[in-house]
Length: 244
Image (cartoon, rainbow, N blue to C red):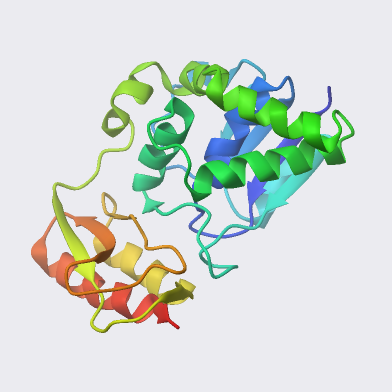
């Protein structure tokens, strides 16, 4: 099989590239994926099981991927109204582990992995559409994708993702300041909120499109090392929310 490259078109990326790469490798493809450098790589385990992960990001990274064909993955919430993944920052790693281990199955990220993976396999003419989709399902349900992931990050990554991507200790559930149905998210305020939350900060559990807000219904969970950052990011998250 050919060696393909996966590269996010957005910064910061959603979890899709990180989850998609081991799933495609589990179908027999050789995959080189560009991931940003917040992850704690073991340099001796960067290339295993048909999967290569490289610390790089942005358009210039395309030239660094040793691949016959590079797929540019356009990732929400910055390019579409509905997030593929529901986390940003270091929480991305936790969401990916949940999908690969089956502890967080059935959500938008898993669906994106299945649909995008099937599209790539079909485009490469490795399988027809139906067989490609079943191949992606098998990669996740059999645990093979999780095994490929563990070859890079270690078995502890599956059991304790915080050992690889530690989250800040303080957290806050953000509630919308008015009622309505979520129609999407604005990218600029979300990027600003991530910057405010700091190096160990994260945004998790972003409400998907169609979610109805209310006084006790969180639209996001944020992590930071101090109360001031949480308070400022809370306002930025609210300004990023689009209500229909």
